[in-house]
Every structure is written in structure tokens, then in C-alpha cells.
Length: 235
Image (tube, rainbow, N blue to C red):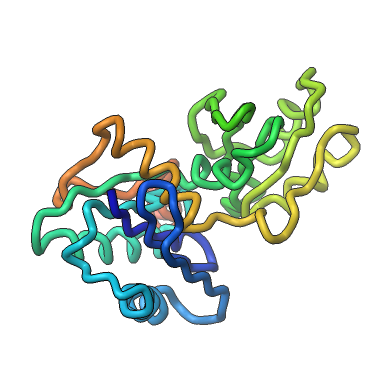
């Protein structure tokens, strides 16, 4: 099964082509350009450089959220545009679960966190052991101090790896707990390769959707909608 996977849920953007779990080609950029400028040229170059025709792609996988509202929408739109031509199956992947894939070879508790602004993170916990990843609870938007309390109270003795684009921010709240470690820079961030590994699992289970039904995963309203709602509540 050949999969084209994309992540643009935060500042960086990446894409990958995999055959089952073999990485054929991948690309990652972290530059000061919008994803609308970088994503499609990256995908085009990836297909050309790997000599892959888009008709060979059996499914498309995307980190559908949580993450940047704009970034997630751009990624979803790109996948829909490519998939609609032949109604190719699509796979929606949690960005946080994709981050956990970076540590599949560890024996650890992975705390995946993304910066949600307003002193919050998008977070989830995963127990990783013997190549298996077990989700401990669903993705949530939570105050940094509240999520930090959960980590500090944890009695696990294995390493607790803090990863994701919100890792550095969150680590400062839990670093005094002895078995917490900040993930290495090379593995810290969400990447299309993690999306591909998670997407392969979903494809095998038959957890796919049509391009028309592929939707972003929002854990809270966009800022403009939150501000409008707050204003309406005051009136």
C-alpha cells in the first residue's frame, strides 16, 4: 500500500511517500512562509524526485488536528484536491498520535503537546512499549498548569518524554519531576513520517474516509469565533 502523507499543523510543513512502513521519500521545511506557498511545491517535488505518479497513491493521510486552524485547513484542502480526482481514500490522523510515532522504539510515556496559545496546550498521553503505542486518553485542550499536575502526579517509573511543538513551553512546568525528559530536537516535532505510520495502521483497520467527508479536528473554536461568542455573551 502506497501512502502520501502530509503534516502542516504548525509552523513546519512536511510530506512523505511510504510503501507500507518503508519510507520512499520525505521532505520537511521550517521556513517563514505560509503553507499555501510551500506545501504543494513540496509535494510536487517529492513525487517527481521519487519517480512516483500520483495515480500510484493508494491513500492520502493528513494530520487533521489539533493544530493551527489555518495550517490544518490548508492541509485538508490540499489532500481533498488530490484525492477527489479518483475518489482516493483519505485517512484522518491525530497530530498528537503522529508525534508519538517518533518514539515507537522506546519504553516510555510520551506526553505529546502542541502550543494552543492562551496558556493552554493541546495534549495527550501515550504508553509506548515493544513497538506498540497505547493511547491513555483522548486529545484535549487544557491549561498548562492543569496538565502539568497530571504529569507530576504520575507514578510511572519509565521516562516521560515531552514532545511536540509545545514541548519546550510545557517542559518548564514539569522539569522538576525526575523522570521527565525533553525530546531531542530531531524527534520533537510532528512530521509526515509519523502521520504515515499512523495512517498505515488506520488503513489496515479499514479506518478510511472519502475526500468529501475528510474534515479538520478542532478541539476548540477559532479565536475569531471565541471572541465573537464572548462579545455576544456580554451583550
